[in-house]
Image (tube, rainbow, N blue to C red; front, side):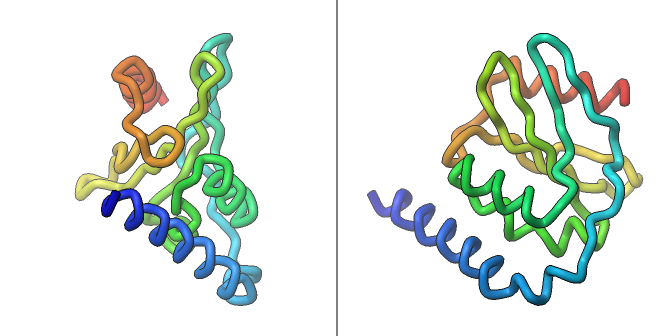
Length: 129
């Protein structure tokens, strides 16, 4: 119960930061996606290229991914929507010390862990992109 309450409050805080800080974020643009989009019959990995898209993904997935807006504009992170077999996941990539993009987070709705098949598919995409 306590952890659920913390998650709810964190999500609300993230939404409020973006809503109130929208004027600040309006002039900022996301850089080009560092890795290409992927679309197959069972897997799609789509970059989130706008602050509005980031906010929308957070609302749909019930997470606070919108709080990453400044990190994305600064080039430290990039967010993708992953869809596998009809289920959506939020993927956040971060640059490691060797300037390689690595999975920082890969979560389902409400920050549930992604199944291993999804993690493996995303890792394979990272290696081949």
